[in-house]
Each structure stands twice: as structure tokens, then as C-alpha cells.
Length: 216
Image (tube, rainbow, N blue to C red; front, side, top):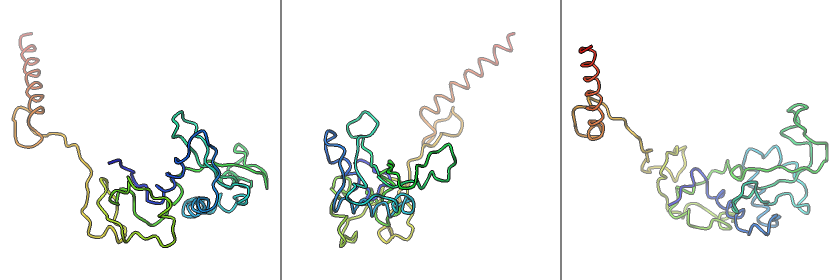
């Protein structure tokens, strides 16, 4: 199954909305429940106190999906429309134009910044979540993780007191272990086989080099 690597269920719902429409129909301006869902996502991420308070009014389309800059058709970006000055650049100095007060500006926000601080399960922790539509189910106010079937992701995730992670089986990353010991001896484990062959070849080369010096 595909690995979503630390993407949570609400972020997957964000991604589904971003990728849902055809490229030819972009830009797509969010409205209604979708707009509310994205705004709540910004509120639960690092831009809750930067761009969120300066978003334009709902009737002016504060959030929309646009085509990305990469060639693939799935390349999309999330754009915010806000009133200047830019809250991040305004104190960055004269080399970083931040705009004027009240100026209509735009900012491309990474979709993984939305719901980045949401305290909920990851896609890789829920059985079949990778193949299940999360939107609009996870946006419902009465949605709960308690009915989900959980599993251990294929990478390390700290327990962090999360109730769905208590008592789980720990998954450890696959390690590549370099064979140790004398190459000329084939033993049990990962040190035999090819390592032994390489060791013998090295010893033969050294022996030949030594013989050459002795003949000189």
C-alpha cells in the first residue's frame, strides 16, 4: 500500500479536495463547508497568527486552488488572498517587499501546513485509510477516531500519550548492517557469502603485492 509518511487524516481530506477537480477547471474558489474546513486547517497550523487574521472577506474568495508550477497535471497549489502588509515579510527588511496596508495580496501555502497541529491519527495508522475518502467525513463535528481500526505504521512514530497508540506493536526501520569479521571465513548471519568472497579477494591481492615486493 502507498505510504503517506506522517500525513494525518484531515490533511488527506485537504489533499482530496485539492486534487478533485480537473486542471482545466482551475482556479477553483472554495466556498461553504470546504472554505470553512480550510480555514479551520489554517487555524490548526503555523499560520494561525500570520495570514489567517488578514484573510479577505468570504465574498472575496480568501482561499482557492490554482495550477502549480510543475508540469504534471496533479500539480496544484493553495493560494490565500489577504490584506497587506505581508505578516511574515513586514519585518524582514527593505530587500523583502511586504506590501502596503490594505493592499490585496496573495500567498501560496503548503497544504501540509493545514491541520499540522491537529491531534489525530495518521493515514498510515488507520487500516485502509490510504484507500478511503476522508472528505467530508472527517470534517463533521461528531466525527471520532474511536470507531477506526488501527495498525502500526511502517516507520517510527512516538506514542506521545495518544490513546490509539497505547499498547501497539513497535515498528522498527529496516537497517542495513555491514558484515564484520574476517572475509576468508564464512559464518552464519550476514557476514558470509559475498562478504567472504570479497575478503578472500582482498587477501589474495595483498599476498600478491607482498610477493611482488619480495621478488624486487
